[in-house]
Amino acid sequence: MDTPSNHNLMDFNFMSICKAIEVLSTRCDSISIPIRQSASYDLIADVKGKISRVKVLRTECKTENGSYIANLRSGSLKTDFNQCSCEFVFVDTPEGQYFIPSIEILVKSAVTLTKFKRFLL
Image (tube, rainbow, N blue to C red):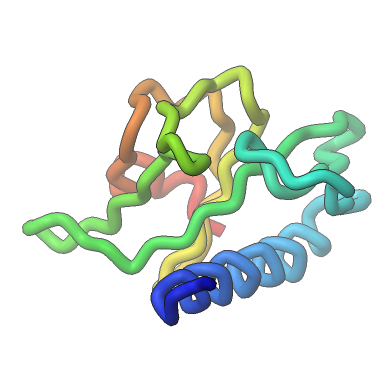
């Protein structure tokens, strides 16, 4: 049986995917939800004529200096982020959303979003 914390996490994930669909639908030609759940990506988007896999993340965590930090690890085994697993990472924060090309992410476990201000939507 799920614990309340698991339900809250699932609600946050669902809400973030809905937010990604809302935000990206004005920027992409089409957005699709994969039939099978994948730890690698959550959405498929037509970005400028190219079909792209999109990983959706939610964070409210901040570093000591006040920068948002997003956990990139996924799945029950918390595997490290792999740039080849998706083309974009959509990060939903309380103060805005980021749409980051995965090739820009050079770390495997967590990313500080101040480095990606140019991808703030």
